[in-house]
Length: 282
Image 1 (cartoon, rainbow, N blue to C red):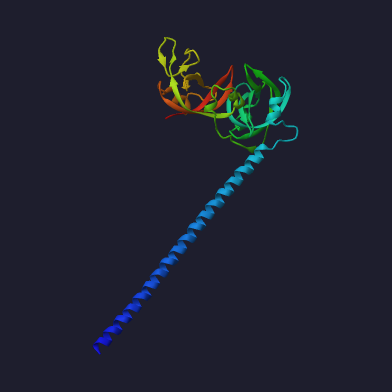
Image 2: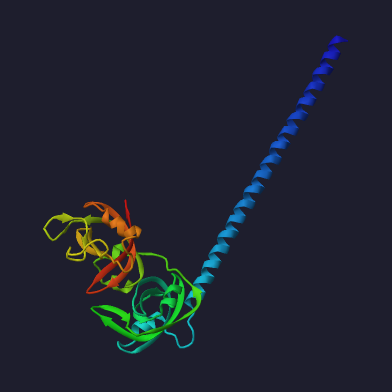
């Protein structure tokens, strides 16, 4: 009798144990399924968000590419004869200067950049020309020491639209003929080494006030950098970035031998003459 009771008790215990195990496995399976479902939902949501962002970007770029009737594309502008009238639409990227109702601007669209020299501009309108502002410009195409630009006296209208051009890395194009295709665009130069310049007394320095060292704080800064054995001169133009800006003070703190990354506008005066708006010491 005792043996039968013991056997029955053991059998019941085994059944209960197996039931508990089954429940445990079911719970684990349920949890795994729920986790997988959550992960899939999260992945799908992320993919949807990425697709929406890409679509939004493409839509913005499409809008930025649209030209009004009678407005030239960048290709047509570059193909136009010198001293001929041009009409372009572009987006202000930086304001170089304003003086006596004249404004000098770096502008860009999806295809290229336009340097607008001393356009007619009131002080009130100049304040409205924040980065990204779309303008329609009518003027005459000219060239000065290799720099293609819209000549003094051009007029502009502010239009609806906004576009900030992404920076284009042109480091590998330094020293090549292809670099001129990016003139006046917002570009980057990376991994450059600061080289010595000589001041008025013949001392090695990391930068100069004015190209010959004859200036003082507040004037343009000039400094030399090298890549692959070639040395290039870069500028921080005080009209574009004065001595209160981060880039101006960053250049004043450079040391010969520093490795730097830089961004700015590729002005073309008697060859490449980058006007730098940011410097990062690596």
